[in-house]
Image 1: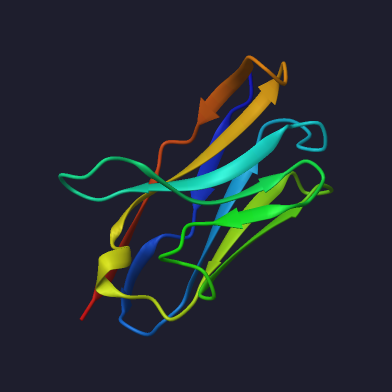
Image 2: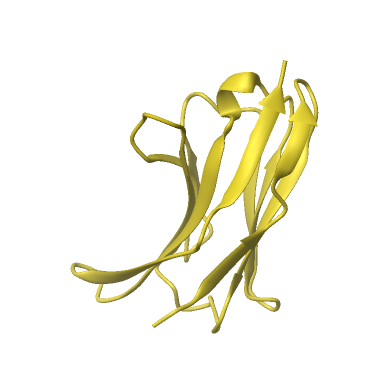
Length: 119
């Protein structure tokens, strides 16, 4: 089991930046993939960005060019740098880890961190 703790959320004006960090309770070197998801009120949780063990990354179309995901294997952290924030980015952001079996991986979630972007 991997425990995840997010930090870095807060209130920011449109056009501003925030950096979210996800700290894992164990080495992330062997974790299949880690990702950031978000859930706005009344909406389903959606994938924002993810990073695979080999280092490849993926982004939702709505955040491409504005958000950057990165991992630090030495610190067991995965960060999400968010620039040019928009009010529609307002949501609770969750960190996720997929680990174990490639075809039937286990999944862990953090508790979430609130991001609010004011117009």
